[in-house]
Image 1 (tube, rainbow, N blue to C red):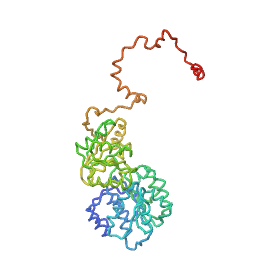
Image 2 (cartoon, rainbow, N blue to C red):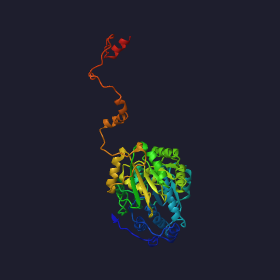
Image 3 (cartoon, helix red, strand yellow):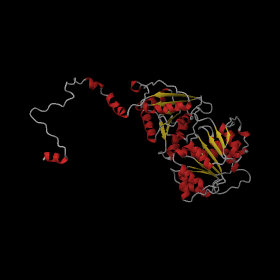
Image 4 (tube, rainbow, N blue to C red):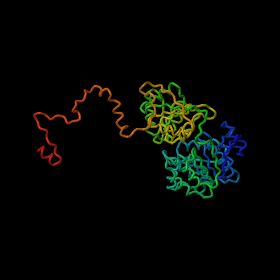
Length: 450
C-alpha cells in the first residue's frame, strides 16, 4: 500500500478538475482544498483505489464526488442506462447529503443520479433506475431488496464507494456489502472512506481494494484546540435538569446532544420540552420525513437542540454547531472524538460538554487514555441533589445491590429501641398456646389444614 500522509495547502484549481466542476466549487464558496481532498482527488483521478481515513467534517464527500464526476463526464465516456458509479452509505440522511453534493458539484454536467434507501415508497426509486442513471447512492438494505426484485443492474459499475464504512460494519451491513460487491465487475475502481480505522475495516479493505493509496488525516486520538472540552460529574437521574440548565445559562444556541439509545433520545426531548426548551430527536425509529424535518428545523435555527444517536448523526452536516453534549458517554473512545468533531469546524470555536455518572467513569478514563490528557472538570451548578461525586472503584455486586436501600434508612435505624440481650435467640413462645410444629411435607401440611 502506498501511504500519502503529508499535509497540503492547495487550491481546487490545482487539482486538474474540469472547468464545470471548478465553477461549481467556486459557486459554493470554496477555494482551498482540505487535506483529505488534496490527497485523495489526484489518486481517484488517476484511477487508483483509495483507502481514506479522516474525521467527520473534513470533506470526505467532496474528496470522492468531484473526481468521480470528472471521470464520468470525460470526453469519450459513453453514457448508458446502467449505473456506472455506486456509493454505499449507512443512513438515509447521509445518502441524501451525498446526492446533494453530486448535484451541487455536477450541476453543469449531463449526469443523472438517484438515491435508494428504505423508509419510503420504492416506486420512485425503481422508476428512476428504469429511466437510466449514472450514479446510485444507496443504503445496503434497500439496494439488496431491489436487487432481489431484479430492479437494478450493477454490471456496468465502474467505481464503487464505501462511505462511513466503520458505521456500516457497526450496523451489521458486512454481509449485505459482500453480497453486493460480488455482483459488481471485478475491474472496478474501489474507494473506501471511514472516520475510524479499526482492524475490521482493514480486513475489509484488504479484501476489496487493490494496491490502494492510503490517505490518513489526523489520528483518531487528536482533538482540535478549537474545541473547549469539559466534563460534569452528575448522577444519572439529574442529567435532564443539568442539560436544561446549561442550554439556558451558557447559552447553547445550536446544540447537538448524543445519547446511547433511540428511546433515550426521545426521553431527553421530552424532558427538555417540559422545561420549555424546543428540541427534536433524530434516530432510526423516526420516519424519513420526520428526520428530514428535524434536520431542516435545526439548520434553520427553529430548534436549538437536536438529540441524536451515533448512527443517525452520520447524516448531520450542519455548520455553526456551538455545542456538542455527550449526554451518555460512549464506551468507544474513538466515537468521542468523532462526536465532538461536529463543532469547532472551519476555524470556528466550539464547546464539547460531557456528562459522566457513576457507571460511566470507566468510559471517561478510556477516552482520556486515548486523547492522552485529562478532560477538565466543570463545577456542577445544580443544587445539592445533584452534587458532584468522587469516583471510586466499583464495589462487590451484592454491596451495590443493597447500598441504595441503606442510604434511605439512617433515620429509621436511629429510632429503633436497643436490642435485648437475647436478641440473637428465638422469640419466646406464647404462654397459653404451644408452638405448632411446621410440617415438612406438602401432604402433611394439607392434612393439618383439614
